[in-house]
Length: 80
Image 1 (cartoon, rainbow, N blue to C red):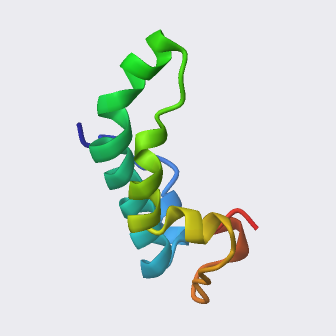
Image 2: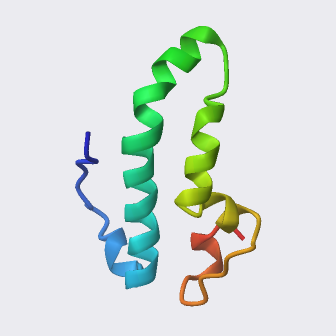
Image 3: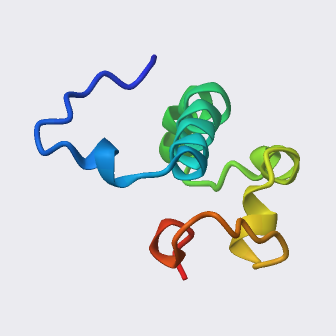
């Protein structure tokens, strides 16, 4: 299930290539790893802990823990 949106406000023009790559990577991770699990986890009332190793592989935990810096990205793009 790919994200199908329209950029009416031309927000994409504000992002650099590195920032667009971060967004594409996050969308790909969510589509491939999270969406297939979330309905069952919600119904069972549990966190999908099996995705944690994949977070590491996709480098999301590194970005969250500030262990990985993306110097070309603005601080707001990494949540800082």
